[in-house]
Length: 488
Image (cartoon, rainbow, N blue to C red):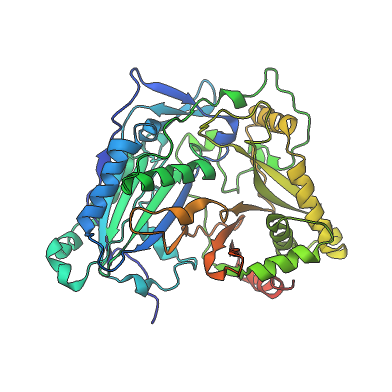
């Protein structure tokens, strides 16, 4: 069967509704955002697909109401700040979170496609942008939805269920829904399809939550929908424990970051860039998925003379391969960047229930010629060294560097950032109809990002997951990359 592409013709959105928190501080609370938060003020888009089990009592309106009420009645009590807005404080030169209860946007939609018509859901599919409520096109920060949950429940109807108003919903205007989302901080969208399945899509601004914190929020929402209540009741929004020191004490070079003046071509953002709007990064259409089975990953680990983790082996391999494809000058420096969780690195550790970005960027660098001449273990060792150097003093130095230079991760000049999604518990996201048949990011097409996503279809005998690598490159570079990637 030929894969169908989603479009405005086959996904029609209803008018969004605004969901507010039952609990919001009075007077309005202003939450401090850390220097780490300031570097990641871009949207992260995810979508999860579900099949409704045969015989389950579910229709489109019940799933939509279930998710909507879970957000408005329960989730937004501890997560009240998610109904707020970002603001740029010109006196301080930084973003801050205003807890003003302007609300979460929730929208429903319907489609005349069937789930099976979408093909392999794990493949990067740019048309899945229709399963989230996009936030690009806004001209200033005050109008830009910063944290969007777009819950797209693709509840597909059986033919016998046509009396539920499918034809009427299909006549509604998608344009009207999109123009009304300018007040949204969280945006929820439910899209209904014909065949008895549904999808839930989220758009979340990274400056508010990192991957782990976002996953915990999603899991709490799913738990509420299952009737099991919140998984997390107490959240700590105080980020003062990772403020910069006064005066700043920069003790390392921090080549993993670049000063703002040198960062005009990166998809990362900054407080100054974000003061006008949350930017829609430039995207390219030439992206591919490459699957690594557990056996292939173990082969890479065995290939290294060092005892290493799956992450270290895969990142080192991708770094070598991409360097061969992208760099022509052997004298150039090549770098790979990735996030390191600092929760266990700080002394004292971050408070229980910490909400925010508890990751910093680490990087490994080497000359292109050196990488080609030396063994695979050389690259693995550099990746490990980058992880090992992240301790309390290094983290504090990063935070102070960002205070002084207002910089960004240095994904420039052919370098790239590996974002590891495969360990996040998205596969556990059960809204009451079972675990998702697929869940992960909506394809971005940003060349300086490589995503590592879980491939449960490649599970081995010991329940090990494979890894799907999502990568975007211009055609001539992609052709080279494809010729090298499976040389393991």
